[in-house]
Every structure is written in C-alpha cells, then in structure tokens.
Image (cartoon, rainbow, N blue to C red; front, side, top):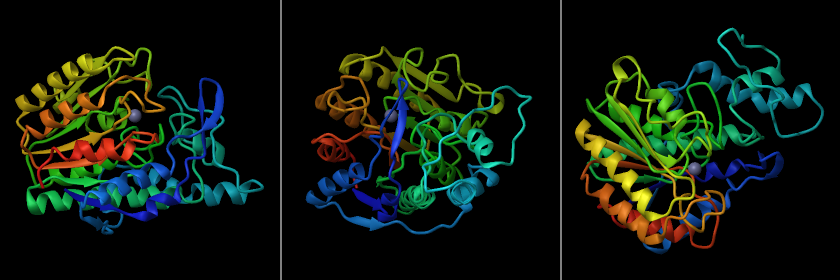
Length: 339
Ligand SMILES: [Zn+2]
C-alpha cells in the first residue's frame, strides 16, 4: 500500500473544544497521525511525500473567500486582539436573511459550524498539507489504478464548501473525489467514520456524477445532529445520489456491518469507476471519542467487503483518536487492500 504523508500536517495542534458544555482537550492531536505512521512504517509500507498542487484542487470544492479566511484568520485575530489566543466564535448565523460581516469575531462565526474547530497559528499550513496529501493520493490512484492511502490530518469530512466544523477545515475526501471526477464519469465516496460526513454530503449534494454513501451513529442523538438522515438523498441532478444509513447509538459489529452492506449495495448500483473511502476508525470499541463498540474483527470484515468492490480507491484518513492500538487498527485495515 502506497502511503502519502506530509509532516507539515503536525503544525496544527487541536487545542481544546466544547463537549457537553465544557472546554476539554481535543483528541485530534499530532500524536494521532504519528502513531499511524509509525505502525505503517514498521510493516514496511513505502511512504511517499505529498506533492504541492497549489490552491487549484482546494478551490475546486471550497469557496475562495473561505480559503482566504483560513489563510488570514489567525494573523487578523492576533493583530486585532491582545495575545496569541486560539480563535473561537461568539455567535453563529442562522437563517437565509443573515449577512456576512467583516470583523474577525463575526467572520469566525460565519465560517465555523461549531466549537470544535479551533484555529491557531499552524492551522492553515496543516490543513493545506492535508489537502495536498489527499490530492497526491488521488493522482497516484489515477496513475496506477491501485489503492493509495492519504494519512490526512486535520480530518476533512465535516468541512463544507465555506465552513470549518468538527476538527475539519478543508474537505480532503471531497478534494480527492473532485480530482477523480475530472478523469472518471462516475465516482463514489463511502464514508465509514462513526460520525456522518456532513461536509462531503453538502459539497456533492446536487451532483449526479459523484455518489455519496455514509454509515454513522444515529444523528438524532449523535454528532453532527442535523445531517445523516435517510430522507437526505440529494437535490437537483443529485437526487438519489446521497445515501445515509445510520446505526443505533452505541452499536457493535452487527448493526455496523449491516449498515455497511446497505451502503456497499448502493455504491454497487451506482457502478462507479473509482472510489474514495473516508476511513474513520472512531466506531472502534476502544476509541476514546467515538462512543461505539465495533471490534477489530468488525473492522477486518468491513475492510474485506470494501476491498471486494475492486475499484481504484483513494483511502483518506478521517477520525480515529489516540489509544494504544490506533496505528495497528489502521494498518490491519489497509492490509486488506491490494497495492
Ligand atoms: Zn468521526
């Protein structure tokens, strides 16, 4: 398995986020990708440096003024206010009559969806490096027809066209899928992170050429709450091209794999020529953040079934938080994919 990696991704330290009314330490920390990389290297996987594609692949899925905001936010904030404090919004807009403000506090509320996307000095550099890592993996897959793994962080699947959310700033899976869609007529994205990939859903919601399937904990009681419902099926040319399959909160292998089978069936009916896999491992029983109970055997079964689609596949790291076996869980999963 070809592994794509950029150490610049370590420049962002997630700091803290709000969980059930309290500021707590974010689990999205540099130790995550470091543990995964160490395990992959110990098994002899070749690691390839991410190339720099510039802004083009990012601007293909994100609004230019949002990208400018991410680039400038920290410097503007620290030049306006005293000290090097992490950026958190005071307010979020709601309703179609809201207008975009120009000041740093309002702008931060406009471009963030929650209190789990702290911006600090290295955030843009790391997010950009994650996007370039995904783009390099997409290029690799198009060149070889074999699977490649982008060890991306910060993750991406909660980031929308103009909004950071849930530890995510740039949508790495969407960037890879968009690149594939410029080569192939039909591209599918399968998201198996325990949280619904609302940013990816938003970006491709009205597209007929990119199918999005997600399995996730029931959003009626689990993040991101407002997306991931079965009645969200796409709009315009994208009607029927979004498939959400939720499993009950706290599920173990059975409901997780049943949901996966339904998602894989949907992908098969769409008959894509290439696949992007949003690989979150946070449904795992020992994950400190995901609150679900899928076993190692469950992840092995999932990997076998997805690899069985036999598609050129860009595998993008999404969630999956530090515990002693994180690196081996990801390595074991990738072991089922040829390349
Ligand atoms: Zn997640």
